[in-house]
Amino acid sequence: MNIHKRIIVQFFIQLTLVFILFFFLFLAIWGVIGFTIMKDEITQDLSKADSTYFSDKINITGDKVTFEEDLKKLVKKQEGWLLVLNDKGNLIGDYNAPNPIPKRFNESTLGELILQKDADSVDYTHWKLDEMKDESPILIFASENMETVILNNIKSTVDWDNQQINLTAPNIQHLNNHSAWVQLINSSGEVVDGYGTKSKSVSKYTMADFQALSANTEVITDAYFDAATEQTIIVGMPNANSATNLKTFLLNINNGIMILFAGLILFLIIFTFWYARKFGVPLVTMMKWIQNLGNGKYEQPFDLGQKNGKLKRKFRLFKDLIATLSNLTETLQKNQTQSRKMVQTREEWISGLSHDLKTPLASIAGYAQMLESKKYSWSEEEAREFAKIIAEKSRYMMKLIEDLTLTYRIKNEALPISKEKVDMIEYLRRTIIHFMNDPANKEVQFDFQPKDKVIFASIDLKWFQRVIDNLIANAIKYNPSGTTINISIEPIEDQLVIITIEDDGEGMDAETLANLFNRYYRGTNTSDSNNGTGLGMAITKQLVQLHGGSINVKSTPHKGTIVRMIVPR
Image (cartoon, rainbow, N blue to C red; front, side, top):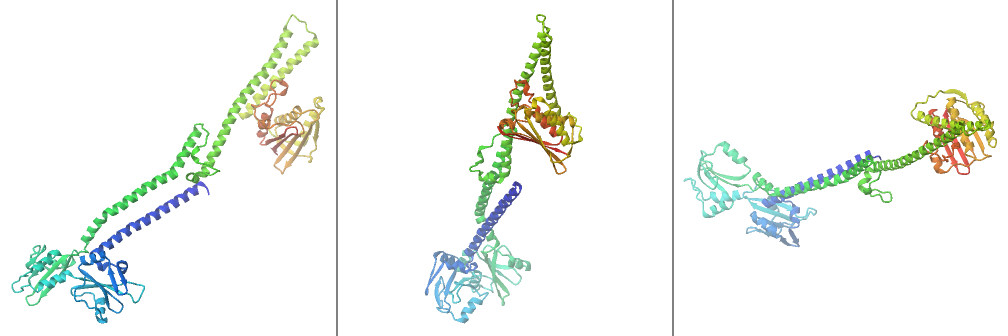
């Protein structure tokens, strides 16, 4: 998997994990809110609870029932009571129940308690304490409708004829304890008497006022109509489960939600720093690495943590890029070392070249001065010998200058190549015969036995002759007497020709072989002018490449050298 795909997969996985984490955090937050709402509802009205709420708050051992203290406080606060009946209807436990309470509830009474929807002044809610069993004990929570209780207590004291409520001290205390109010309304809707916070807020009711009072969820009301006097008494009290109380509840849990969101933001900050470290640190490291490469500092960073070939975890995502940069660093290091060696070799070559020119020039100058001197009278034979040496040194200097000029012409693509179709077998045969006819090569054995009769290739006769002559001359010059030189040629399909020149002579060491085609390298003694200019193999390779071919050399010390050329046909 390449780096692009790995980065995409990494980002997808990370974002997926973040999404899942946020989803569960969202569920947790709303779970806490829902649990708190449910708990608050239960605190306000125990009838909103389910059977699981009571499972760990009521302990039943045989026919003995024990209620936890917090449940007792909640029941007492809501002015209700609890009854626990077994599956036969027998009362096995109760709390805060009014007297008298029957010890057993028959089927008819039990059916009324369970199935009734709106009792006169008491609401009943029931649960099975063990949902998994059919014969489970039944819990009944009874709570009075306080507005109805207050109304029933007050209506018996009303003076309907004189339009007075006539509240007793217990009635007033009951109203005050529940923040309730009472109003007496005549047949025209006028408030003729009242008590409490709302007693004077409305002086006369209309149909719209009654509808608004009925729709108001913040108030619980009950009313009694006296048919004889056509008067109505209304009792109202705050609704503990109203929206206002819910708002109060939400304000109470606001701090908890803020803490949760603060924790979420803190998590996001930590996650952001972790994410930046995971992806940012490797990128910064590699940017510094690239910057160092641009500044010529070819070193790999030390903080990649490579041990036994393994990277630190945060760098593994970019292992392909790191591998590429490592290869580039290594290549640049080698190029830098090679460049320094090249500069050193070039300086040594120029120094040697200067020496090569100075030596023949000194000889030419010396013999010229000897011939010019009037102090001596040279014989004709001596004069010819001096002239021969001067001519030889001049030819060497001319060849050196020509080779130097040629290599730079080729480098600057200023050497024209004119190809023509040539029979390569006949061409090589004539070249080998030329070397064989030279008396200086009488100790060298030549072997040329082509398999085909005719092989044609397109070459420049002048410059390709330079290549062949140089390769054969080197095989002769740098090997001892008795060396055998094998020359072969064979086609590669219809496209290429391979020419091989092999000898069994001295061979070359690894350093000489590695620098064989370097025009700034001379593996021979530059003080000996007979060893050549040191540019021959560099020119040979350039000329072969100009023909669209390639050249390869293999050599083993004391075993010989093999030169292979491949040129297009």
